[in-house]
Image (cartoon, rainbow, N blue to C red; front, side, top):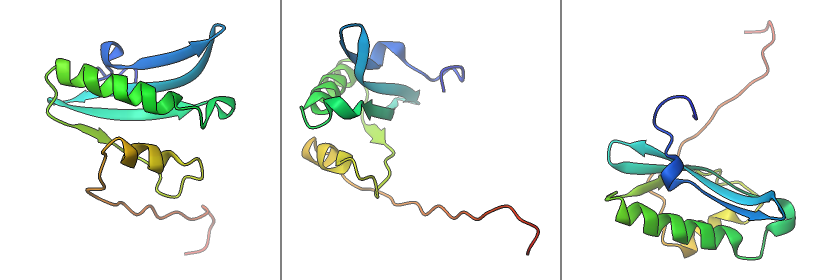
Length: 108
C-alpha cells in the first residue's frame, strides 16, 4: 500500500500518546475518491472515542482536498465494534463481498 503510489500521507492521520501510536487512519487516492484503510486502534484505547475523532478529522480533511466520497472496506464480522463507529459517522453499506477459503491440501 505504501509503495503503490496511491497512499496519501497528507490525508492519513495518527493519534499518539507518549510517543506511541494509539490509533491511525490511512488513506489512498482512488481517482478522486478516498479509500480509507486500514483503520486501527490499540486495544487499550478502544471505547474512548479516538477512532471517531480521527475519522471525523479525516473526513473534514478529505472534503477540503476536494474528494467527492470516501470508501471504507471493513470486516462485517469484526468483534471490535468498529461497525458502530462507521455507521455513527454516516457510512452506509453499499456492497458486501464474500470471501471463500480452504486449506491448501492435495484433495480436490
